[in-house]
Length: 255
Ligand code: BGC
Image (cartoon, rainbow, N blue to C red):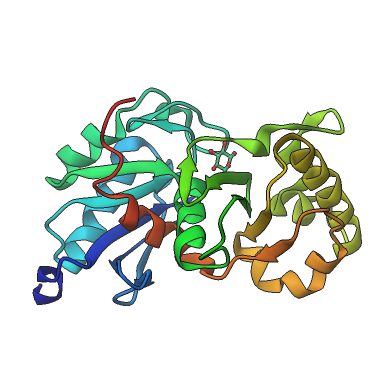
């Protein structure tokens, strides 16, 4: 694959509950360098089955070098530590070792929202924005990425703050809106309570909202009454792939 010889290319894979997506990434521009490939997440999504799909994506592109990969859970030095919306068989799995043996390449595995947040901070809605940027992804769960002057504080897990006596994501994620058939107004009210709680704790300078539903942000984001400027994400479905590719090579050191 000639394109890879330019050092500016990386490769990112985004593991989600319904699909696993990957593509080469132009690291200078923060954009996909080719059409991405999406393969439905295997069921059950055991570590071995998911690793097999990751290997298939790398094979499809002929990628034979380090790559970055997201996972929707706490990931410390490559080890998966939680399983809010994923198969519990993942807890304790050394994802670096698993993917190395499944693909033959070195992987850097990070939390999905952290990857998306880093991409938005460097190439998307918060590019050139200093200070504290909070990126949240609204999907099955709520993911969070806290970036200060371009540097990520990983695994913040702000989707699990308490909201109205419940786990916040069970009340305010996009999945709660569809599950409960909430109107945009009702959902926006829940998001207002959520973001007010978050901003009382962290006082961010900018909030970026990602996840698939951010594409329809005109319908609901103006109804969310936060004190902090709040804007939709710009990289949409590609943020995880781009952020994962960017992180490659930066995050293998143990704390
Ligand atoms: C998980 C996070 C993840 C978020 C979005 C939450 O349930 O705990 O680790 O980033 O969902 O996928």
